[in-house]
Amino acid sequence: MGIEIKWTDICPQTGQRRFLAAEKFGGQWHFRYKYQRRGDWTRGLSPTRAMWEHVLDCLQKRYRRREGVSEQDIVAVERILALWKEPVRLDDMKEP
Image (cartoon, rainbow, N blue to C red; front, side, top):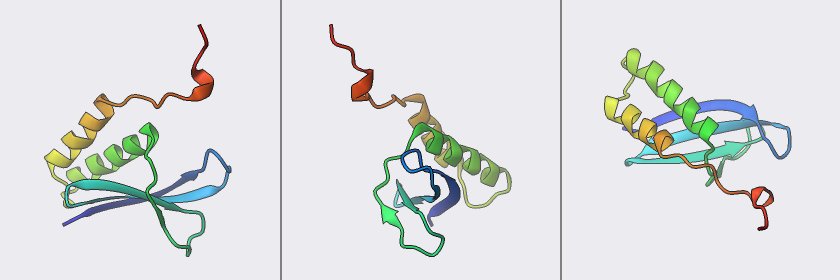
């Protein structure tokens, strides 16, 4: 049985509202997005820390309501956040 979490946010590149979905199936998390409610999903979105935090929050709420979320699901996402390192951006790098 898989887990699916859907929400909306604002795309940092375009400023448009974006529909997001995180799905756990077969032990793997996959993220996707679309810009129109009835549009096609684009797979392969690289999740940000904020996305993982949203997923963790939703998992914790579903766990309390006994909605198919196990404690192992929560621990796995907490581990991802504990090991999280922000990607290095080229404009942040300084020359010696």
